[in-house]
Length: 348
Image 1 (cartoon, rainbow, N blue to C red):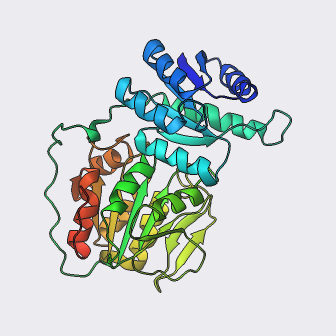
Image 2 (cartoon, one colour):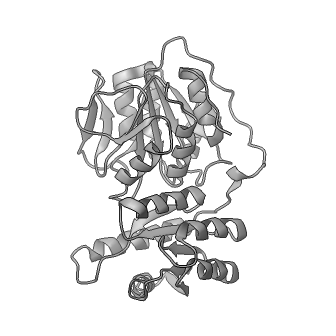
């Protein structure tokens, strides 16, 4: 049984969320909080398996409540947002940076044709995130485990960086991109597994918090240096040999669209040894087959290490498959990219 605390200031919405969660026999709601202070107290006292967190609440918003919970009683948190734009997205992404695992849309009214889809996504997310063994070790002073040696600068110039991440990815991307200064000379393509509707808000949030330009990729767009391109909802992200974005509508790969494997395979075909791949925090094994293609083409691969990963799934699968050249904590990936490709900047 998954024990859940629901934090939501609207009684109507809270009642709807509780009803949705308790419609699943594997989930039990053990507490209902109407403000940020109350959800922190309930989490410490009741020790739930997971918290669903609203972002707009009295006394303390979802961002501040998430920070408190991560200090006092680290617990998996899923942000349940009413909007995929504006202030809601900013608060949601800041909460994820503070330790929340994922964000989903609040279910529509049961009368809406969208209700069943939202309900199923919420239940699936709660079940998946409740299994995460949450240890925010990347904020501790714990030593990192042994890892392969650092990559030396390559003889041939790297012309493209391809990045894939999932659970815990927004915060990890924020950290990596913050370490790349505005002189970073190559484009960066990113697949981030995320709830539909939020990728535009993620691009805006990252763009306002780093020196590079960050945007959602567009079909046939010419790649530019110093620019980060995020895969849009429900489209695979690839690149052509003439340096243009290709957005694919092919079926999902391993359940994912966009897929990390699609990105890495496409980049390997177009750039070969002139691309560098990065696999980071996330559940599952998306990307491993694509990294095999990248290695066969002569590309190098960086992986995020276990100690700094919220979920050591995708990066572990790549490591176990033998397709990672160098494993690094998230605090060193951006600096390492700068060292390999151009310039140097290190954030404190």
